[in-house]
Picture (spheres, one colour):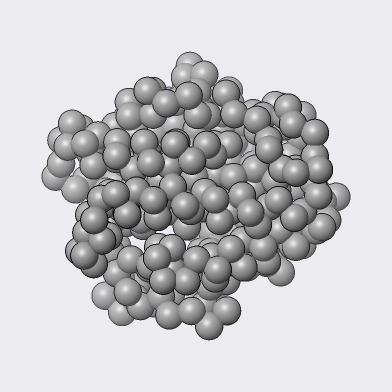
Length: 311
């Protein structure tokens, strides 16, 4: 599978090998950093719009997390789909270039670090394309085959850009997780599977033990866990993921605020505490970071706890 290609750093360590040796630090939310840079994310394509309109902003946001000490950069492809780009009049060939280009943006940002930086190509759920908060509900009324047909072209475009790992992230239910795992079987790229959860269940209401179990025994899956959930919900989920799969756990919750899909804004109080990483590690977490509304300052604190520093 894929090896590190950062200039100045000897190649060879796969992300899976690094996770077997210790904790690896993820980045934080891309959208909040882009807003901090003055970018307008009101479009339905969200941060993916900038892949076409201002790719330099994407690269600058990745670089901010590299400076904070992140070792893994997640690409801006979460909401980048052929369907979404098509609604903006962007043809399939150009859309494929933009989706694959998200990997290049992260790779360039990581290349200046002078240390190991892996690139995770984000494969967001079907609901992200709808831009109506459906990823926090799941159960879209689609069959498994329909979900596979939706995800396969984007996975193919991302895999063609040679990321270090595919991040199957913010998955709201088991049906979509199983569809995604079937799709990635045909590509020689490691993956992690990360659900968005509420309490001790997926967003669709399924027990986490059952949800994580779908990845057990699949060698291609190098980590399993949760993201874009309340930090408090991550605590128990890490334990369940480790017990159900025996794999390293990935955990990157959001700030603890709630997403208002109608108003397209976050509400409530933030509750992300980098100090929680100690409990997560004891429960089996090896890939740790933040999601929406978690910025470079929080990642810097988390990286400091792990003995990581920026370039």
